[in-house]
Length: 186
Image (cartoon, rainbow, N blue to C red):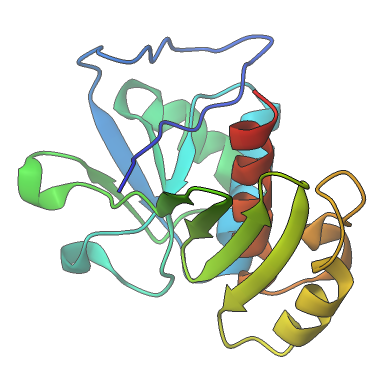
């Protein structure tokens, strides 16, 4: 199992979070996935180095996702979220090895095929043809529609999952889709 650090390049970043740094991290806990997606979009647009992760069981309160962020920025981040009527349920510092967020990505290379899993959704790509050969996982009502809309198309032809799906499964598939594009288009 390969673990990846998924950070988009920022125009500006209030706090540096380079790999290998010892910056203290925190987790923002929200009631539902919709709030996580809204907060992620808002915070990335503002330039903060954040990432969506799975919460450790000790702090799971509502949603199966948390936002990991630089703890030094807690006051600024919570102020921005509160001003946008999106306050987190809780803010938890990552204080030890047992309270680490869980990476929601897995990438498996099967030779000709590459399978990328994000949370509960998997996207499998034929690396020789760049065609999506399978989409599986989840239990949301839009999964069959997402699969029918994407399977048999190349990564370039397939629609973005968030453009056609609106559930946790669509969001997770979007993450898998983006990572597949990074893996294959590097």
